[in-house]
Image (cartoon, rainbow, N blue to C red; front, side):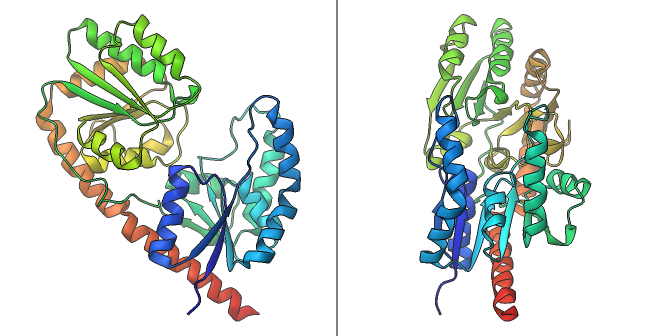
Length: 355
């Protein structure tokens, strides 16, 4: 039998995109070809990117003529998702990446983005909500919820293995988010500076890269914690798994959050999670039960809660074991991606039968 073909529109370097495509190949036996914008959206390159975007429809149609995809899938409803819907290739599945994809709310392009998203929602045959918080936004946007599949892609539990490190005599914390302003690494560093003044032993490992790296490295020096903080830079996924297993705390303080695969990976690996109190995180973390939620930007409270949790290792041991079971039941890549791949095959079969 000939393999079914999928055209993927999105940023192929992103871990979420890689997980999505690999899962479809592994559990759906799909052949996948990709397309993404090549021009940067920063500075003077924005003009080139806009021109590339304007020509994208014709470029994608040329690829489709050669590759002859059985369906098209795309991430982000306001960009690649819109383009996927515009091409006319059927069936089309789109994924909302954030709580709304309409970010920031005060953007002068908000109304325009909303128009693009509404068009993508109407034309899509399947809409992915990687979590309930996304589905709630779709319902408020009057999306046909019969087209919505509420399910995270999940994570590979064979790769992210569980290890209980809650008996360690120091805080071994890890952060795995991009070094960009919205992830508030500066607040995390300030919290650890407070812990140092209290003589609480710690090591903070920061994985990833981004525009804030140099300023964050300088901040660590200014706060006199440079010897306790390790900036690992971009790190291969297999090494990330090992570093998570060597840690006992996972910290993430973004200003906004959808469904975080990084949080799933940490919970699966045995890290105690402390994250921002946001709707996206509340779907998975119940404050004081299986982790701790911190109001946005409250680094002093973060320091207090870190100390509180560190002093209660028996409680943390119970939490991390419970979290591993939760991830096995709700975010298992092997189960979830198999279900997603099967849904795609059904959509393709339905399209073929309708011809």
